[in-house]
Image 1 (cartoon, rainbow, N blue to C red):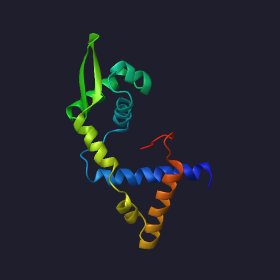
Image 2 (image 1 turned 30 degrees about the vertical axis):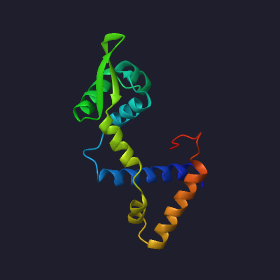
Image 3 (image 1 turned 135 degrees about the vertical axis):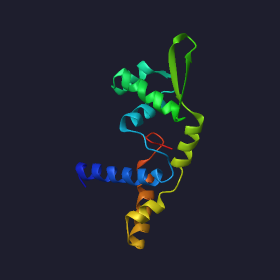
Image 4 (image 1 turned 45 degrees about the vertical axis):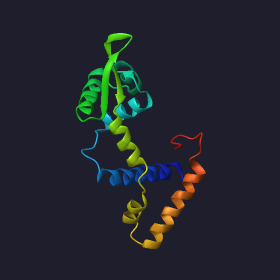
Length: 144
């Protein structure tokens, strides 16, 4: 396997993950909203300016994304105790619970739908579980 095939495999696995989740969710986030949301998850209590600096988006885009996701109940905002003019952003509890449910749902059915032959699908699931044990360690990205 070369780097190009590994990237292609990674994209395919992400597609399968998103397809499985989209059946149980409301309207999906735009790629920009997804980037802002992920930044807020990694840096709870950030200001719009801090999110803007980390994501590279213009401040108006970050503000609009935060407002849309706040309306959908995904994010919560509140005043900064140290500076009342600044707004702090965090992921709403209900969104965190939904993320946990989504993250812990099995992918076996998505693999079975993507791989028509039942024996091949079961082998793919077993191989993915083996890769998980080999590649996802406590100090690796995405440990969980």
